[in-house]
Length: 497
Image (cartoon, helix red, strand yellow):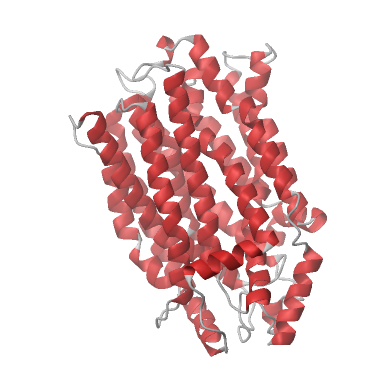
């Protein structure tokens, strides 16, 4: 049933009737399985980058290289803010680009090679750079790798919004994207802990072995390179059709970047979405930065144990993604999103909370299976939210067109990418400063970390971050773009055309 929900196209799909919205009039045939599969494959590159940079980069520079946590956090924050500010600009350019291969694909073909080179260099800093030399290396190549990823990611997201206007099929498109993102993460986690970070003499916890990181980065670069190019080639024909249909319309001259920004924030639905997601991602930033730390030093898991927990999360998100369309159909997108986030965060922090109350084991043979189970359940509960969020923003693009008579998917998804990167950067910076404030030791194994430092680390990772979830979801409750309102928007767009 879940698979059918992902691939089915509704009988009232505006694409079939020549309806309005992101996929312009004239693109009559519905989305094929091959097209959605090829489009989703492109998200594997984002999953690879996310796992490599957000799961391992902070840990590598703090615990393996020995760079100060505050400097690591500062470098990641500056790089992410720079990248996030560029994202709306890339989206704006892709909205207005004119080429024979469409608006989005020139960016897709440009990005993969420099992205792969940057990933390799990021995990291969020269020896004897010193603290500030390492800071500069980390800052420079993090910023460049994220910039190249944005050249691909923002136009790719915008292309997804153009594939369909149907309220439900957008959930299906977003599901494919989300599933492949986690396939990318799973592949990276398997490569990391099964091949490059295996225990060796002197490094029983292989993630502390610096020799494994350069070849690990090369493997990630190759996977991202192939995924981007195959996805771009698969979606090329459809992108050209979209481009010619858009070009055939009589539309007003494109607004400036600043004009798009002002117009977008005049839309209540976009402003609420933007602020709520920004706060919510701060939570993700702290947890992404400290995930390997907590599993290594608080739970004292082996490399295989850490891999198992991360696998549980990724498989949970993938399975939960299959339920996104059914959840949005039953509850509408806003309530489905909020419910998914709240339940996921509650399950995620439960083991730490229970352990501090003496109600959860902190060692023994059952620990890894229990943590893996909780990780799977948290991912399963959170999977629908990741799918629904992208579909909600695609609906906002339709509201923008109705009000301002122009399309700007690239700009809107670029602005959304800014919220994610800026808040992840802030989360990483907070994590780095917090590690220094609690005097968390660097470059040692778990046996030599004081228990009180490990407890402070776990409390920062878990229960304390409920505050961010409460605030962000309270704001998201004010989001007002319902299924009925979106249907009315599409009807008005069709009448106008």
